[in-house]
Amino acid sequence: MTLTNWAGNTTFRASHLHRPTSLDELRRAVTGAPRVRALGSGHSFNDVADTPGELVSLDRMPYLVEIDEAARRVRTGASTTYAALAPELHARGLALANLASLPHISVAGSVATGTHGSGVANASLSAAVSELELVTADGSLVTLRRGDDGFPGAVVALGALGVVTALTLDLVPAFELRQYVREGVPADAPFGELMADGYSVSLFTDWRDTRAWVKRDAELSGDWFGTTAAGGPRHPVPGMPPGSCTGQLGVPGPWHERLPHFRADAPPSSAGDELQSEWLMPREHAADALRELRAVGGRIRPVLQIAEVRTVAADDLWLSPSYGRDSVAVHFTWVKDPAAVLPVIELVEDVLAPFGPRPHWGKLFTRLPACPERFGELVRRYDPHGRFANDFTRRLLGE
Image (tube, rainbow, N blue to C red; front, side, top):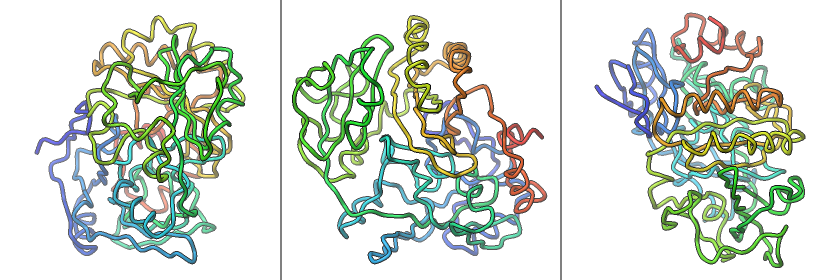
């Protein structure tokens, strides 16, 4: 079996890929393998899902979307993508509070790695989880709910506790947004004011020239922090065709067709021809961190396609990169050349080190943050013999 991640930079070592069609089949797959890991949509860029044992994909499990309009919640299968889920919610007058830049990713994989969108008041996608169901090492089906002991450690858990089968997510009333691209963002623009002037705001930069993608419910007019309106649709990577991007130019559209940068019915981003890294820091360090990155921009640009700056509200999930602090997230889309990119990743980590960076778990980095002891205790409680352990989790837990 030869299986790679979406970008093709990781080849999974597993001897077998299980694709169960029922809960009983999943339980047998889990208990029948001494080492097993769950595989989502493959959008991670490192070995977080890798194992020399066996892999389990839930993409053939029965499709599950149960919407509770009165409670404003949805219970959905782990392998459901946001692209599939969002239109069903919208048709019932409901929405998720935020989405990532790609709608193609699975709900469980996004939640497990702390994936996020943007917006000063918008927390990570994981923060919407009110309940999760998982098959643990002995084949038991366990349900954990918000408020339960260990729940904050079980949501962003990197697959270390078991195979998540279903999640229940909080919803909000459906809404519309307009999306604008503004060019020529000044380096001295007031960061806090700029990022707060929209429901979701992203800055795309090569550390020399910067554009803003502004998603808001009201029209945007005037010079907007000294910028100019883009003359037509844009792709985040300058020069790439914008056909795969969601609607711009201020045309109103439903939340799920504006919050992501890329359309659900088009190939995502650079279609895998890239590598990615991202670090999150306390938001109060944003101006200083961005200034220091601009100072080394000449060393970053040769391997950079584009960088994106976003904001994420704090949550209470132990392994979330935005745990306990409102954050600024700095994302890098690199060229697909690991040997050339690695030294620049190390440079960026050096530059950001004074600002308390935490990496996005599904992207490329070299320095692991300290793991809370209580998370290690949770792992030992649910997986005492390390059935779900892999090299990634062992490094994290210091084993």
